[in-house]
Image (cartoon, rainbow, N blue to C red; front, top):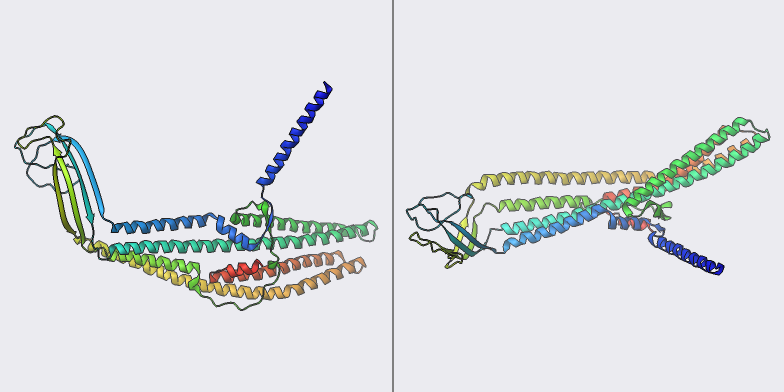
Length: 469
């Protein structure tokens, strides 16, 4: 009996270990491994995952369908009809203006009014084709093609915006991490000096007020570190918004961004290649194509028509009904071949008004194109000025760090030898921490300046390639 219980217990333990191992394997399969993310990978992931790009892509698909719709206007129109009814057959002389209320009736006037009904049927086919249209259909196809070009330009502009936003979010995350690194170094220095002062206070070589001041400086340094860590969390969320990964899975790898980029001559601006300018030019071209449609609207419409049909009736010309199911089958056939012309005589004022409105819209969008070019030039000039300033700051911050570190060492040595006070040490440590933060951010400011110049120029791929090396 005891041996059986031991065997059951051993079997249960093996099953439990198998379940635990299976759960560990499944958990490892469900959680993606944490890998270093470069700025180039972040931009590529944003272009794949960000929803606004998918919206623009579907707009292109809709515009492509619009081109196919416009081309169907070249095809002949075929209308087929089949009808069965049972109705009265009274008819009167006279004219009836075109309307959609009173059903039409054919046949002679019988001179009598009766409520008797008879079966009637009809079946027919009408083929209509417009052999020429003075360029109206071609203008419609051109307008649809221009709409697709505008959608494609919008997609490229959206991709450009997402790329810039993802790159900027990535640089911001790196900047916050460098701030954490410098703040952590400040906490460590404050902790060292606090422990040193506490030892001096315990041996009554320094007053207790110095220990309190050192504790306050240590707490302030920790607060700065906590705030920097909070900024890292927010920046990581911003990056995850673009790359489609949970914030906890994002680990950046940006050794190149921690170094100063090469100082090279900035390429002159060509605003016409910027995606914003390209999209606006596509908008203007689409509006001009729509104006062509209006200009081709006030022309005659020619249609070649072929029709064949058959009708059946259960009534005779003398007023008698055939009865039964007579009239349910079409028995009388007719065919026709003709050519018709329609012309909207009084549509000219309305067409002219629409043309005037469309022309005004074109002028407005053309002015918007000039404004975009002006704004891009100003943006580029600001970016170049900020880049030059960032390079100057980055050249000066190493001197600032070296001087602050020397001042901290001197203040600490003077305090330990009894020649200085705690205020000088605290001030020197704060200055060193801020100098280290400024030095780290100054290099990233140069990269951000390069990103600003590339953004104004309309192409950040060279920047991404250089930053990802």
